[in-house]
Length: 124
Image 1 (cartoon, one colour):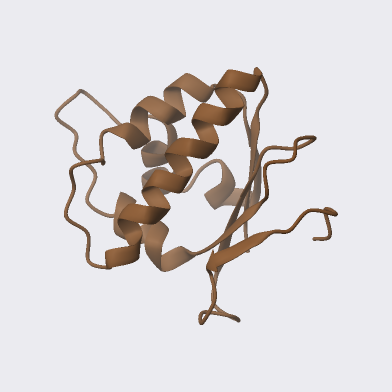
Image 2 (image 1 turned 180 degrees about the vertical axis):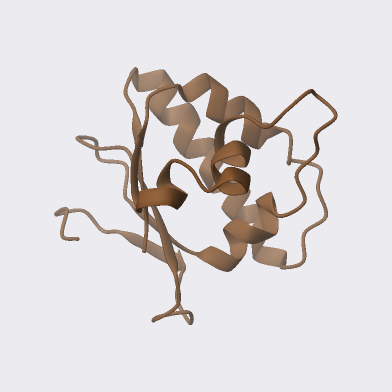
């Protein structure tokens, strides 16, 4: 996808040809981030149900909905998704880079919330 911006491939380099997850804030200067799906799986594979159910990314990942069901999804409820991913901040992950990917997701959702816009997710 050519957006005219310098896309961020830092978390996909070395995994070319494997499943890819992309997060974008459309119509902004915020660069799209391309992420190896292994980092996403590392975050959401061990979801906690103690708060009464899955929400946001966790729900989408665990129930194969949203971006994980059709490969393309626009998140309009920034707060639901941001609150969901924030619960993983103190998690020990399998890969060292997963914490950085989580922080990237948090920053992206915070930026979209601050700008009053949405986030576009793609999975292929």
